[in-house]
Length: 332
Image (cartoon, rainbow, N blue to C red; front, side, top):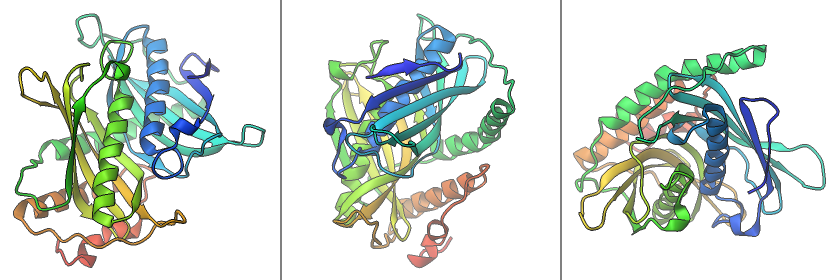
């Protein structure tokens, strides 16, 4: 994928050119591909630090500020900023720019949590990271400050139930996990799963808006169990909330042995898509009005997640997100 540079023992940087094959439906590199890069860089940092196999456990809020274009020189920096007993909190920053020279521009950043596991698949202890410089201490404190917010988000997401009683736009993609999706541990790596999530959210959002859509945010990506090669995969995306421009789409990934027929929840997240016109400008979308009791419950759930995220350090939410319920005629 590219060369690796390790400016410090707790950091890995991948550098490579964005290829034409990386360009997606939006004309630039899709969010799913960026998330795959993020996962690979964070995995490299986690394995280098722990000296063991690692699995993706959680991906925090990732905002896609500006697109990465084909031909850009891409740099994905993954830095361990905090360690638990077996977990590593890794700050990732994606930047890109003209390969002929000039400064790179930050395109997105997020926190990824990996867990080191032994041969039996159980978590094992990792060396503890001790911040020394003021910047390292600040990043450690920032990671710690988000722990409570993350726990609240996970708890809120776990409490929700999704059934056929919902009336919102919904799509389901089904396919087999192929050998080309395998990671270094013989399972489907988290980056591929996040790419599937982006694809399903795109189909759901474009159907609802009737226009092309791109991801501007993904959050609360929780990995519950490994997804194995040869398993049947089901990726379900459902609209749960709209702002004036943003479409909030809940995505569930389920998988299982096709011989058994039962699918278990593998991954869940909420992603925000915006519609764009032919010039690439974001445009307003029709407000979605909940109809069933389940619609109302999931609509309130999406607003609750927004409010939780609004309490995170340095996280400021656009006004149009928090006022959308009143605009659509739904009371809190």
